[in-house]
Image (cartoon, rainbow, N blue to C red; front, top):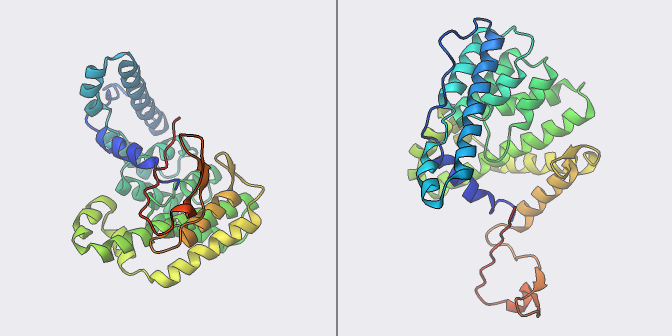
Length: 286
C-alpha cells in the first residue's frame, strides 16, 4: 500500500524540530508583505544551511544533527500574525503556502484565514485546497472545498481538486474516528495534535454518511478528472487508487492477487499461500 513508505518520513519529520532558524534582523522592513517574505526566506536559508551541514557530516555527526533541524513553529506563527493583521494585502500566497506547512493547528488557522478573507484569490484558494490530505485535515479546509463546490461556477480543474481533497479530508476524519472507537484513551493525544475544533467535528461525524460521500466524491473524480494532472499522473488515477484501497485493502477483506518473482527466480503468487500467515513488505528506494 502506498502509505507504508510514508511512515518513516513522517516519523523523521516529527523528530526534526529542535532548532530555531536564524531570526529576521531587528531592523527588518516594516512593510508586512516584505516582512513575510523575509521570514520565509530566513527559514528557507536556515534549512538549506542545515542540509548542507548534514550532507558533509560523518555518520556520527549526523546522529547529533537530527535533533537540530530548524523549527518552523515560530516563523509560521509570525507569518500568520502578519497575514491576519493585513488581510487586504494583494498577494499573500507565499506566506500562506509556508503557513500550510506548519503544525496541524497552524494549518487549521491558515485555512480559517483563507475561508474568512481570501476565497476570491485563486492561487491562494488553490494552495488551501491542495493542502488537504488524509493526514492534513480540518473543518476549515472542509468548508473551503464545500464552498468551492457550492458556488458551481469554478473552473473544471478547481472543482476536480475540491472534490478530491474534500474526500481526503473525510478520509482523515474517518480514520481518526475509527482510531477513537478502537482506543478511546487516545482522545487526549489526538486532541493535542489536531486541536479541539477538529476533534469535535470528528466526534460528531456520521461515519456511514461520510463514507458514502467519500466514495461518491472519488467516483466523480474518476469519471471527470482524467485531464487534470496530479503528481505523476492524474486526479482520476489517484481517485481510482483511493477507491481500490478502501474497497479492497481493509482488515477482513480478501487480499487481491499479487504476482512476482522470488529471489531464486521462481514465479510466485500470493494465492499460492492461501490459508497460511503471510507478511508482505512493500518498500521503495528513491
